[in-house]
Image (cartoon, rainbow, N blue to C red; front, top):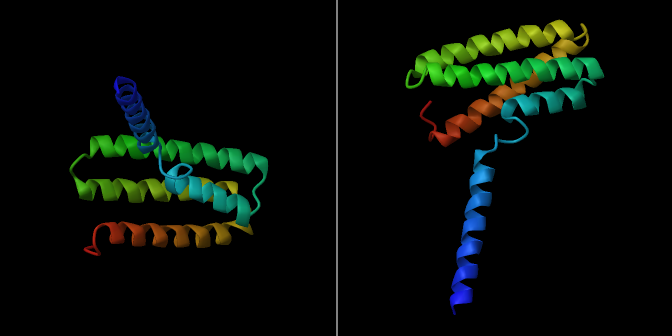
Length: 129
């Protein structure tokens, strides 16, 4: 009986550890940034150097987002303004790497991803915004 209780405790601890690790991971492959790079690779056909540069730009944007969340904690309007500015800067940096033919497709992909993101955000909040 004692052996069964011990195994049950160990199993419970393992399940808790796995769940905590899974919850600590970022959503998807880097959240929206991961979706952006994946979609660009599929739909625009990036060169290896473009993909690497865009990955670096998106990594900087993720770090800036974390910094913004920390510095604007509790101030939703400041968070939104920072997010808009960050998105603008990121778009400009990425568009500078793309060819003239790739830019319109990039803008189309970003418009679609942002609409999807806003829809999911609205759904989580119960449609209040």
